[in-house]
Amino acid sequence: MSAFNTIMQGLEEAEAYVRGDSSGYGVHEVEVDEPDVRAIRASTGLSQNMFARSIGVAPSTIKNWEQGRRRPHGPARVLLALVEADPRIIQTRLVPATH
Image (cartoon, rainbow, N blue to C red):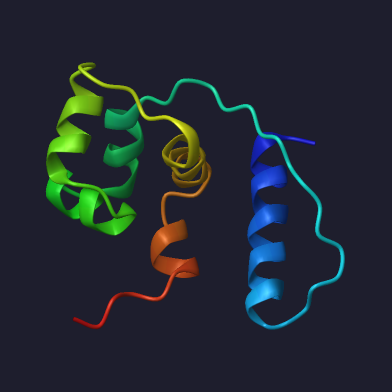
């Protein structure tokens, strides 16, 4: 199973959990390649500031990732892999904040 399919399965399980369906949960270990954050962000058409807001990190984090001073780890890496696979995933799968 590809990393994308594994991640999507996890998202579907999370959505089921939110709806109250607790059947079929399993632990998934995902290996994700080093992301090219600049290319991933560019594929979304968003500025650094807007991309940062959309994934819930500080703009300085995006700048540091893009300039190679820091590297994304753990959940951030998985989220970036999802965005790389589907640049509109955040707009289509997550509810925007209302504040």
